[in-house]
Amino acid sequence: MADTESKAPSNFIQTIIEEDLKAGKNDGRVATRFPPEPNGYLHIGHAKSICLNFGLAQTYNGTCNLRFDDTNPTKEEVEYVDAIKEDVRWLGFDWQDREHYASDYFDQLYDLAVRLIKEGKAYVDSLSADEIRQYRGTLTEPGRNSPHRNRSVEENLDLFERMRNGEFEDGRHVLRAKIDMAHPNMLMRDPTLYRIRKAAHHRTGDRWCIYPMYDFTHCLSDAIECITHSICTLEFENNRALYDWVLDQLAMPCRPRQYEFARLNLTYTVLSKRKLIQLVQEGHVSGWDDPRMPTISGIRRRGYTPESIRTFCERIGVAKANSIVDVALLEHTIREDLNRRAPRMMAVLRPLKVTIKNYPEGRTEMLTAVNNPEDAAMGTRQVPFSRTLYIEREDFMEDPPKKYFRLAPGREVRLRYAYFITCTQVIKDPRSGDIVELRCTYDPATRGGDAPDGRKVKATLHWVSAEHAVPGQVRLYDRLFVKPDPDEREDGKTFIDFLNPDSLDVLDDCRLEPELAEAKPGAIFQFERLGYFCADSKLSSRDHLVFNRTVTLRDAWAKIAGNK
Image (tube, rainbow, N blue to C red; front, side, top):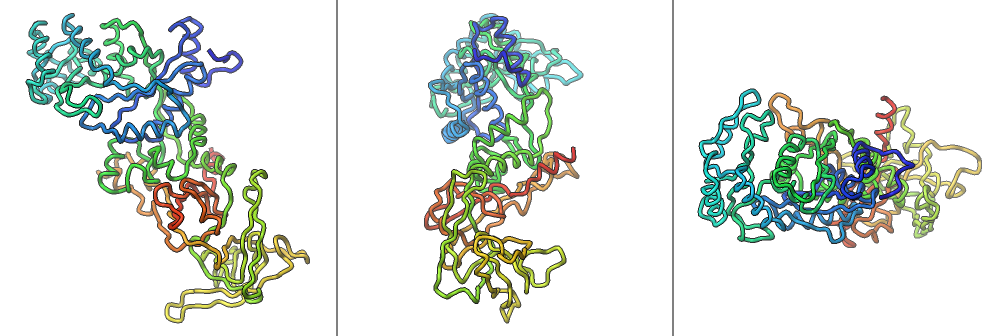
């Protein structure tokens, strides 16, 4: 056990574990597991569970298994298994040799189901799914016993074996636990343990045509693996009664206990796997790894770092009651992490040409730029400066309001790391009237700093040399939904009705600092004054640079927190 005496437990689960350790339970072991179903990609809510389960194992010198609860072959794919393993590794966790699958235990689970039948605790029911629902009763009315509930042990064993042998079609029979049709917890009203499903499994092929239900499989998998603390989210709180019933009836040598914590809910986000699948299948996003998606693969592609996700999960804590976390806290955490690690670069997203009339033609000089003011060890770089530049179109206004301090006719501004320039002429397209070029002058005495005569300017602009800039595409991602709670019903609308039509803005004519031509897919930078950007891991290459906006520079969370 780790030395935790000097540090108070940070959450109620740690308190439970430390009390168990003091009482000598589980022979002083702590064994957790992360048990995803391989029927979709993991999302940031799963990241909270991953950090909790693997983190507890690290804190108490225990183990954490990665177990795939693969009991539904019609929805599970190897693609999801591989993606889940990649996501867990990316977050910084290692299950070593403890990779398990519920399908590893299908033979044992079948034998344990047979035991329940022999002991009169399970029976084969021939009611249809609709009939089973009708017999179950309601929250205020008890259910009714199935007419097949009192089948003999011999008949149940025969039917269950024939189910396994493939004699019956899907839905013809199920195996149910014999508990209590009047139980106040409706889940305990003779729940289904096995169903017929004639579908090939991604690991066992066609060997099985009956598959155990999740609630039967999960607790027994925990027991087989000798898990000590089975930690899940609050929606499984009612399932705990069945979890305990199955383990108590079968008296497994190892006896895990289930504990529930509040799942992660984020504003402007949906985390329901069913809804995420709908977004993908209906084409509202480009795939599971679309950078607007809250999937781990999506946020990784957008430029989030594993360190920032772990910090975020630590900050939101582990609670017993559900709540909604403002996505601004996540954005703040990402921004905070990238501020320390991301090198600075200059990029112009909507270019406006600037010609410096008194700068020598054909001349190029190299100016020194700081890579990251937060980390002196990152050093400096050389940036080319020439007569023709690009600045952001929004950094110029021909007829500015009073509080507009950027470039305007007759106004002087500073170019980052370079010189003071003054706009002297505005060139427009004679047909459209659009501004196509600014002509300016520069003060050679202001290179890299302030004016020697002490005059001040109120704006510093970023820029790139037109001759040396490299072209690139920049994809401005924003929140996927316009409503803080997209799941909230409003006039019959669904979450799809609250999709943000401006969640992606693709800019194809950007101009980037030449050093960005060497950016490897996945590399993250701060584009000065614009935000944090990541070279797209799928689309970006040396010949076609594509950058995704990870997060803006504006710290919205600080304002929110200050108003609390």
